[in-house]
Image (cartoon, rainbow, N blue to C red; front, side, top):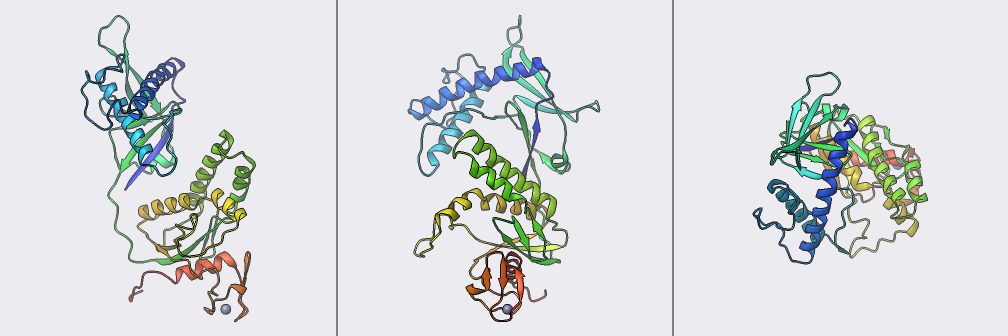
Length: 355
Ligand SMILES: [Zn+2]
């Protein structure tokens, strides 16, 4: 399994920050230029080109040329492979994937910082012919990054103007063979409701409201989406404990957004709008990662009737569901609707005769 940790570059001194910014200006200029050339098919993507062949980046040294060329290839290919409208990529904020040729990571000997990234810039020191300027970026560990202490760290480092990203790798451990089977209902008002009666992220509604107040596509809108994703991760990290869980069962809702072919699924427009605010995909991604780390099996099941079936007597009728409440028309049991759905999901685990 592969994970990343993000660290701020704000501890850089003003002088070093300035050098880093200059590097981004130069690389950004050539990155866009290369993208433009590739987009007009004047330059191929994903080839091995020699330093001499990359003659449109004359100010840069060979290694930086290769770096910018590879990055442009990745962006152009990514855009071409994307579905839907494809405009020429315009880079604004970008990260550069530095390799061992430009970066190395050193442990700090002082208490103030934990690590230093030594980054070789494309600029030559004044008065020298080929001695490149190097800067040291101070890095502090944080709660998330400390989780990867025993993992293998990739030698490459992603760097943008404001942050640094490390990549870690570890073999995926085997799944647990003992523990509880827990169903999880993912929803709009509550991020997660578990079959054990726990609720995760009931505070999300404020975040969604913020998104709906912003103009779609605006900077504020994008910021609000980032906040939503961060909070999704934050709440799940904080409130979902998988210590005694061996299997997690969730609904498979992929295809809901597009509307499934053959089935006439009428989704009200207002609900569609809400659905776009709610990020099912982000939520699933987070659960996937947590399950992998905690040796928990993640099972997706068809959500048919999970919200209409009574988790106590098993009778399914859509008349039992009243918004957030579930009142069984057969046995009369009153339950929280999301909790009821989660318990139904927990009954749909992988069949295990020894359980
Ligand atoms: Zn019932």
